[in-house]
Length: 327
Ligand code: NAD
Ligand code: DAU
Image 1: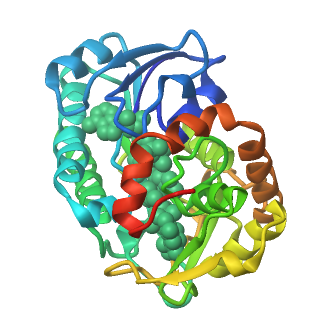
Image 2 (image 1 turned 180 degrees about the vertical axis):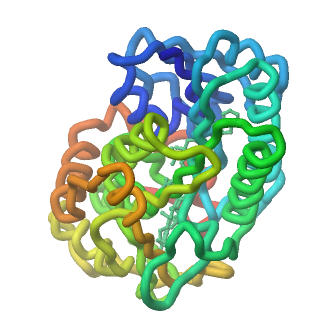
């Protein structure tokens, strides 16, 4: 199969390409934003530099594709609170541009990579695919809009399209703005560890390779017009995540600093993956304890990956977001 994979120079898409690249002919379309890095892709991967909201770039990249998997996104909630414009452009205009091209070029299958955040926050129990969409942040609101456009293209034009909604991913090559890599790198450098609010928010952690296996399962076997949740096997409060990182790095808990809460902060995410397990046979393979250990080890051993990031754009972002410099 010839696959167009968008946004694959980022964290999850590059893991996906590593997983399926041997078995399929892959073309990547990526805008190379601050989060997209050519080096994330396996050597020899065909990369077209361009935006999913650019119809010409999309048509060039989609020529001859049998299927499209759309990872391209602005992925950080805090940045969306600061300025939502790029989020709307990529998630809404970009998704619509991909869908139009897929229909016009007769692509056989379209898969949208989405997030549990479209359901909003849940106090107890877990979201299923029939839970109402109730997003809280500009990030999740624009992702939900993208999902609705996918459903509209299935209903209106009969496009063979499905949606996967993943919970919080972690693992190698995640940009250090996200909770786990931020805490690992700060702990390794002796920088303070900024925990938002009371730190008792809960996230449902999913090792990135498990998510990518779930995505590929839905691409191959998922029903058109359907969404599938891909949730991690474990839930954990943020402050507990930070304490586990401290222990693995061998740092001190005195580094923890409680800082102002994120505006509109969702308290808890939890996904039921029963549909994916029962219909398509997917199961998460990596528990949080093991995945976190692997992740910390990877960051310890790959300074050549994070060194240039930590001394570039990310430094400025960090100062603006946290009001202090990295050491
Ligand atoms: P990331 O920020 O690491 O990577 C995003 C990639 O998309 C980058 O390579 C970037 O250059 C590219 N991109 C951004 N805007 C683009 C545009 N307009 N056109 C083309 N390329 C563009 O993000 P990630 O964490 O790998 O997330 C990938 C997808 O998975 C996103 O759709 C995200 O919403 C979804 N998701 C992420 C998580 C998570 O925990 N990180 C969980 C569930 C779902
Ligand atoms: O749930 C899936 C989503 O997970 C994805 O759709 C998003 O792309 C991805 O960024 C992630 O969103 P979160 O907002 O949950 O992830 P983040 O790593 O930003 O934050 C995780 C939790 O940690 C959240 O409750 C906020 C908190 N946090 C985060 C940072 C960066 C802190 O307490 N301190 C921090 O410095």
